[in-house]
Image 1: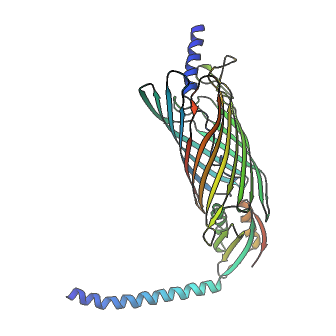
Image 2: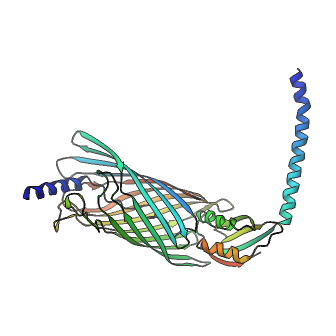
Image 3: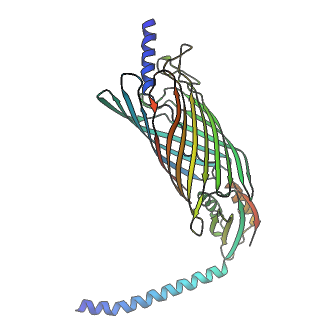
Amino acid sequence: MIRYTFLLLILPVLLVCGIGCTAANQELATKSMEESETRVYEVFGMDCPGCHGGLEKLVKKIPAVQESEANWLQKQLVVTVRPEVELNDEDIYDAIRRANFTPGNRIK
Amino acid sequence: MKRLLLMVLVCATINALISENASAAGISVDAGLTPPEDRWIIRTQFRYMQRKDDPTPMNQKMDTYAFPVVVAYGFRPDLTLMIRQPVKHRKMSMGGSVSRETGFDDLFVLGKYKLYRRNTREYTFGIASTLGLEFPTGDDDFGSETWDLEPGLFTSWRSGPWASDFSVAYKWNGFADRGKNGLNPGNELSVDLALAHQFSIGEKADMSLTPVLEFNYKHILPDRLSGHNVSNTGESLFFVSPGLKFTKSSFILEVLLQFPVWQDQEGSQLKQGTRLIVGTRFMF
């Protein structure tokens, strides 16, 4: 009986904490997304999903890059820049070339 | 001396009868142009090959199960190094008796160099040269016991979902030495063409399913001994090979069936049967 009472007491506390933490995390993530910049580059030469990983790996090695996502069908690379860090486009173009692809225009 | 020569010839003939030397590469040979710099690729395959329809009264049949493991690394955007080590299991039936053997085949090292690559919005075209060296490291029953050199050329064309790969390679067996009992294994010419159409899966295009059709031709010259061709060695093979490939950003699963639509063996040799290849590639 004592065990159930304890559970009944602790459960709402955990729920409130969980919701609170999730909301706080979401707030932080949104803030981070707001602060980070997203760039989109054209990439020529990717011909299958297997090409994504190789390019993303090289782009993620650039310290200013927070996240990168390639799409062979759209011929695009989406790069999320770390907040308050400078990213030179030439570093991205260099990574694209080292992945054996050819950089096109910066779309965004 | 004559008796020794006769013994060697008999051994060579039996060896030729049971050989599964004709490894007509499937699943687009070594798959693609040079990968990105700092890219690791681990490729494993299961290959089933059979030899059957013995023209001699010995009534032989042979099943070979090969497990090649390949590790490739992109040192530079234009240079890739690849190491292949196959393990083989062979089941040989002769009359009523069956024998089984398992062992390592020769270690193969291949360098691939990008000669030309053009990426445009409409298409990608590339040419790469390859140079392979096979070391005589295999077990007695599987290795060739010779140093073999294999130069080759690979071209690739991609346009939208369509892809075609063409490769030609010439394997110079025993370029620096002789094999067992002074026997020089016949050189091999391989010509492979692969056509494919890719179907993208998912909104992010991070998966695809690709039906493949390959045409694999192999010509093996007869073995040589003391300047003469050894009888019952040498053959030409032509496979038509449909297959399917599932691709993710770091993983590929591939299956290929090789049908021997035409073959021409010198003398009395076992015929090639249908082959199966199931393979995976992990890329990181």
